[in-house]
Image (cartoon, rainbow, N blue to C red; front, side):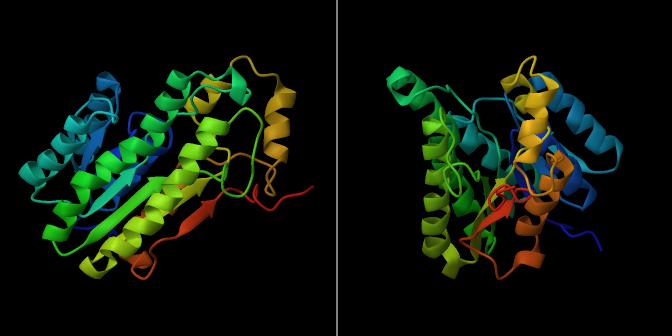
Length: 256
């Protein structure tokens, strides 16, 4: 039986990378989807692919930092499919990088707003819809950066991703009695278009160095991270809440 049969899910950052892989996987596993990202054309293509394969998908493009978008996504899920069971709040940014004194207040705020404040706005509207159905599962994409490792030049990113873990734990305690599970997913280096953009023209030795940081000596595939998100979203994780789940290829523990 499909693992998300009869479930209704919102996925953010669905136009590429981990979000797109998760949308395709969740749809194959029976979920009806509301997908969002900033790029409307890519969302339309993904929604067509899901529907052509026999699934159900609605799309709404926009900026996850906008509270009105987060409210509209939940309204769309309720209006189109009848409620909300799952939210994979995956969209985010690496943001401005560099030593802390070089960052502007605007740099800091953009990263925090995209990665952390957007999660607050999403949960603010998603949780009541889940409670109305008797419970649900929220998953936030955090990172091992700021949790098990620190890297120079990533202060805003690390702070925002660490903040997501605190948000996850507090929400898990606050809404657990009402049937809402809340978890954070912490990927390692993943072979996505956004990571390619962050390393434009990177030499082969740069990629080799990044791969070597991981115990598995490679980067992850978006589909592998999507499987971890599916686990947290599904009833297979029915007794898992408040967790920071590492799906990082061993980068957190590797010293070789």
